[in-house]
Image 1 (cartoon, helix red, strand yellow):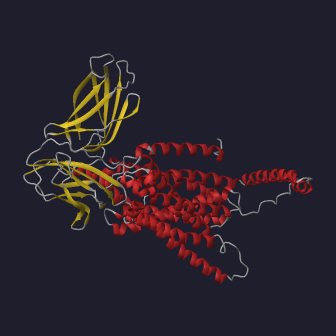
Image 2 (spheres, helix red, strand yellow):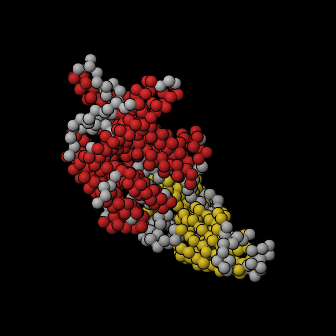
Image 3 (cartoon, rainbow, N blue to C red):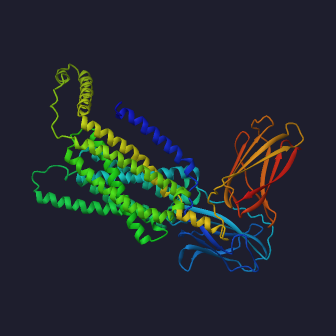
Length: 623
């Protein structure tokens, strides 16, 4: 059987990571609604005899409100809400806005958008009627994140987690196991990555939640609004803590790492205690900036969930970040001692125990039931994360076997390379530089041969490399979980819909709706078929994709294409959407709001010339 070498393993890990990035890219963008809208007053689709004084909304977790978080539009599309939205009786999971006096009968549309307490933007819409339903021309659109801003913000979140792991794990490995230049690069690289990612997240936070473009990242007014929110304060606190972390790194890899003959053992021990206490405070503080702004700060038992989340993140950092530091030391060919590897092995085992204990609590809190574990997207990603952790533990057993075979025998001294004398005897500086480069290449090759000749260390390096590859995938899945609606919230959202609560924008299990509409305008080239796809075909925010083909099935452009929706039973609509041409024969619209469930009348108007036009009508079910 062939030995799995690093050269064979790297392409495998690269392919696996590329597949994961593809899977997490487009597919993960839709799962960002964390606060489920559970009920409204007046109820969605209801008819009330008189105008209410205010409109109230209730969510499954706390939300952050802005001046336009709740807008109420009359049948003519004019705003009739008064004042700023506020929480009801100080409850953060509610929102209410007053209505103007003297409003008449008819169907009113309520459009809402807010920031979930775990820092993710949410939005939706619903309708209610006063006296009797009526036609309405109100058009609402959710403030969806700009695609470029969304991509940059998501990348920043991944980079921030990776930077924290490398920073904390590298420092712990240096302080407990081994300090070297390669380990220093890991820790310093983690600090730089975390600082850059946090700065980018702070600038992009306003455009991300407000649906604005990347050019507004440097809008000071928008930045000031972000700093007044909990996520903004958490990001700013992280930058301040990173300033303290820079001082810590300078001491850990500077004066403390150098063997100082003038320093007594007692003085060195005091410095070690100071570094341990200060490093723990900084590491806990950095972890708390995530706990105070994401899942742990909302929902059940936040007073317990936040400390547990901090412990969980610390355990991940010590384990995975330390693994990266160990791999860097082994890869550089440094003489890593058996005792140092054993110390990290015990440290990793303790970290895994912490992860298991805290992970069980977090799973119960975020999932809530066995059904949600397999029936929600969050639960399925959580199962994948558990499988990856189990895979890493299995790979760690191979690492322990190789560790047991390590010896601390010193390698044979290197023989001086003949190039050294040639360099000194070179006639010209150019020739001396050329010979020096050749000598450096020969020394690197000799070092690699000497490193690979140590079978236990080569085996340990391959095992740790495999662990690190799985760790990269595990980190990606963990970051994705922070951007996915928890299973408990999704279950509450589903239960709220059939009980008369507000319909939200959660995706339906039945998937998108497709309607095929043949048309014939009667003129030349007037026949064809329009395929209309509505995703997710639920009340609230939807996207429309329209593709037009001729009788031969070839994509064809038409001068004019219009799609509208009407709810006949309640006289709502027609609601029109602005279609944008994306390619030949294809149009798309995003952020299109259908305020309630039911059977809607889809009206398609196609014009193929200046005088040839036809309108086709179909029915479509909206959940």
